[in-house]
Length: 377
Image 1 (cartoon, rainbow, N blue to C red):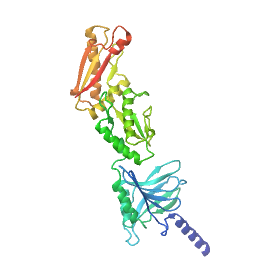
Image 2 (cartoon, one colour; image 1 turned 180 degrees about the vertical axis):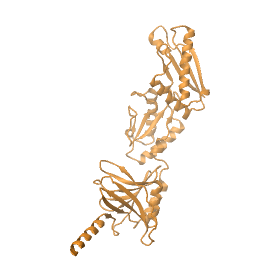
Image 3 (tube, helix red, strand yellow; image 1 turned 45 degrees about the vertical axis):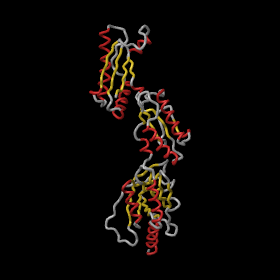
Image 4 (tube, rainbow, N blue to C red; image 1 turned 90 degrees about the vertical axis):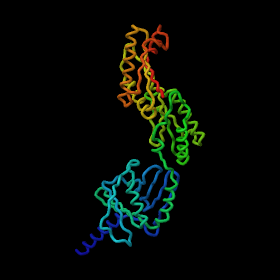
């Protein structure tokens, strides 16, 4: 009976030991990988488990635990810090929130972000040790991250942090590449952004950049976007980026891996054509005006908006003047509903007095039934 109890206790003890993972003292190492866009500080725990820190330019610090390809998600995970062997046992241990980041089917890693990751990094520099507590299918596991031989790689990691680019993918994508109407020349602001982008791309050899049209509502690229995107591509090539890394996809859809640059010019948002006698806006026209309103608010907020409205010559001059005014007011009201200052919008109704084409034929009349928007400083 005593032998049976002893065997059970020994079995339980061995199971507990098997559920604790830690790099042996003799082989415990930390390694640093340094670059201009990423800094890695990693620790191999065993053949399957790796923990460490990742700092990407422009992003918060991450502390992670990767458990290998055959490991699935966890039911519950927590992270706390154990004191160094020479320190007193803490009466209170802070528990940090842990997130599961899925990578591919049945694989991923546990991650702690931002200030929590900074706390963990500081604790390791003091000889303390982070511990992941995992629950998976009613089985508990404890993964201890050793602080042995940590200090020197930590100093190298700090040096890498100081040399990182102050920007990253998210910052490079922030904001649009603005162009004035009928302008394809790159402004000084765009040139500076492309110089910064090229430095990032040269460091990140696998990244590509996709140039897309902010105003593209259909499947067809506009002529002005083609001119502008060609200028941007040529500038990046001159800055040392290979042409095959600069994509101009036929549709705005892009992959997450690409850096996306959105070209924003008003040219294709400023012309509206109407059916005979009609004063209403179609859904597509409302989308165009919403984009134009965004452009005005972001880039031309001090400009006056002039709406020049015209009709064909069918009907009386008085009724045509009334229709052209109604069309202009419809556009004005919609721009105002999208946040454009009403006091800066002026409607000029011309009726049939300024035809663009001959009114003798239907094609000419269809082009004369128009409203043209101009932005005036």
